[in-house]
Length: 222
Image (cartoon, rainbow, N blue to C red; front, side):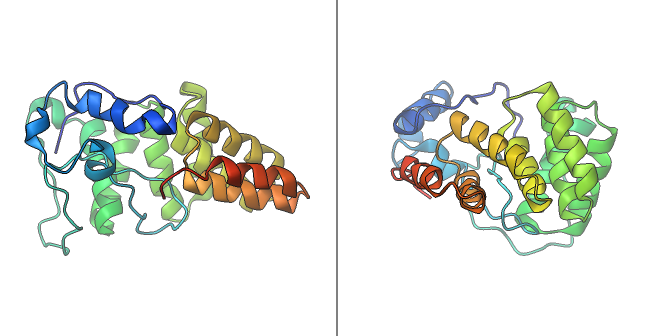
């Protein structure tokens, strides 16, 4: 488990993403440490498909030295922190949450929910807990957590995208559209937000606006 000492997260323009995230990585690493090119985030923090939700937005934050494919399930499913700072409910809970999405292991998912429920709540904890609960069939609880996360941090993009999806399912398209637009303002290359926004706009007879969203994502790599 990797403990993050600093957060590289703000949303640069699409053309600046590779250089922006690489500059953060190179505060600790040397260019010679990796021969796969300058786009560190795409290689070492890939977007992965959620095990139980096809439209969830999830980026792997484990930052492995050598990216690997998800391993087969093992009988040993528990995580152990390297230091005391890694063993708190929050840090272990977030790590279990990320791992459960990659492995689909129900035990890791349940442990993530247990730990994050006990952890001091903040925007990231609430967002990840909401994502887990949504995947276990508790959309109302997930919605409340996403809303609380956005009150804590209006820039919590994952909460914006997923809350928009839940509202869209309920037919509350005006609020869903506002959330997806807000997410795309912060990161124009969010595939799920862009796709859902286009569907919602066409459903409200705003085909021209949907076409503009599609055009705005033309240069994005999905």
